[in-house]
Image (cartoon, rainbow, N blue to C red; front, side, top):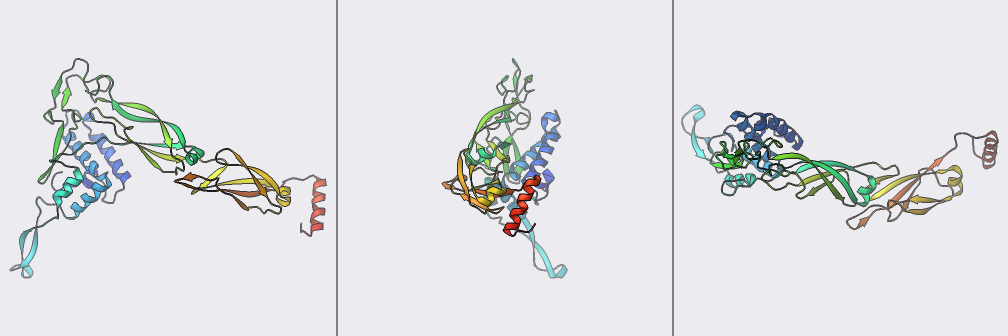
Length: 362
């Protein structure tokens, strides 16, 4: 990063920006300044490098924390870790200023931990792809397998990732001089990243591949069967190693799957307990009855409803809830009483007779 600039300004976000705001700003700027969208524009390529470098740090929570520590110390505000401090002597207010060296407390180690440096280089790792899927309530509760189609990048099958058409010659990239990497200066430190012009390959074909247009990568739909763990909550994220995007030169990244849970017509959930509501008629509530109640696993249990059961009364069926990490919840059944909305004259007369005999007002 050039002196006097910082990563937040590079992406145009505030210091308190959320991870989503940082990702949104990066994608917008990367799309605008990507070398593929600006062929032959060196300024756009340089800008793309700055944007990528900023995002690689601010998108990682640990690296961002350490970077923020260095900003607080002014590591990116001055050309060298020197500052002026007041000292006794002539001048306004009887003070003069002298230069002194600050010790930033192992700032070199901070650089190494932020950028993953070993010998001044960073290890480039493939990005993880993300997908959100909606799963049925019972699958989330009991676990199971669900199919998912994930759009990811993969190595071009036509050119095998080289980016060149059949018979094309591969020439050394002029941007990185064939090394596949470009260096970013940070004061006395240097950080290397994959070259954006050749995408880290170090070579550019004389004739681009007609399938991938020289990128070495294509967009494909990957079909997977996802194992949903029992007791999965809404918002749960599952990391699948090596199932994400595969670049032309690197290994496949991971796939992050987040779950959204579809509502069920019968069940709702609270922790490991499941809730259900069952209606009974006025006679069943008054005289008592036995009900067949469906459980999560599709079976039925018999629930005894005693005489005089009031609307809203809840019965607990032990051990018929969700099982997770060795614990299992219960099923709670709430009773509602259905009252007939229309009676025949004969039924109405008998009901009034019953009310009078029972001393009930009507």
